[in-house]
Image 1 (tube, rainbow, N blue to C red):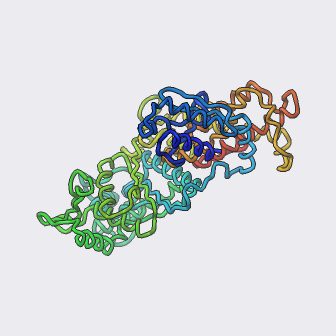
Image 2: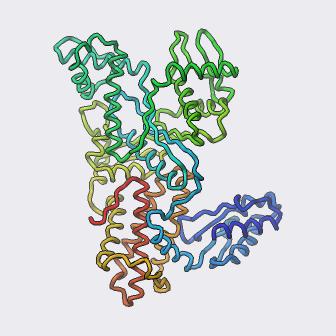
Length: 540
């Protein structure tokens, strides 16, 4: 039906002189049902090429939309928007579709099997994952789930930065702690790593004979491996599975050397004052970037370039890098790199996962003193649970700073948004049990004419809109649309449950229809929560 409406609107635009294909007619599902089941701004975008005032063009679109089977009415709104209202039967038919498709309701093939990589977390292996990493983990994993649900072949990847001065500094810090544990005088370097986790690393590494003879780089490499092992365990416990861990060290020397030769051969690098520079300004960067320092040591950016060439060579048609809040300055140089290396436009997408403020009683808090200023991810998850952590980290777009209310996340009450959504599904499951189980598949559709309350149409519309919500969330890289959907839909259902009898409705046919509505709502809540990586209990 969506395709039919697009075609009719495109035909109307063509008759008015606008050059717009059906694919160019954007239909959106308004958040407010008062603005229609679908809405389009096609009249506004096409008015200039048609040479017709937007509202005049919108009137023609209204006529075309209203003539489409299944459309109840259409109207012009504002400067030229067109709001389209579907017949109730179309909306209520979605209940049957949701129950027939079950866990696949909302699934689509829009990704067309494209091979996509989502790189996320990629925290330095110099300390435990923190709350910011946890937010990136929740976001990256939910995004990967969404992309897979909409037809892409998705790989998750964590880039392990196990080289460079930071690893040597970690080794020096561990050495100092190891010497202290033996009663020897030692000083942690000024820029070294502190916290009890460094002591724990020293205890483990100093148990091996001859550790004192290892260089800082060797000791740091062993410590980094132990840290990354812990990071992997934390992510597994957080529900992030199937992650590929790609070590930076695997790029040396061959991949980095091949990259440098490629850039030099293409005239994209030059030597200045003994250092090798990448002409990233030619790709839109603010300044050229150093690849190899004058002392011969490659920079982190050199590894980044080699790493992205590696991604391209692995056949990814799309790469999404989810970076931390301190990486804003990396965006321009990465995109410039992609352009200069000849990667397709849009092949590389960079998303910044912003800062998290953990709050207790309105005040910023530290979860633990054992890691110094670090707020360990494991402490957050242990304190409030995986479900609450994932849901709360996904309440806002990654580009927004997030205030995380720990006290609220701990609550096992309807004040807690994740509990509220889970309880909606559990309440529906209770209704199904009370009714003696789900009706057999061949019982036939419920008599939706029995659903004559305004709230019932509103709930049915939420079910109908779910596939469009999923597609939009994947395309916009916004998993938080699912937390909003789960919360809004649960709120509507809880109010409906309080004011209307379902199994005890006045007529058996009405009770059957209301149970079907409830089951369809429960199914979309379940699908939304599972895409977020949140569990869906049957009882609470």
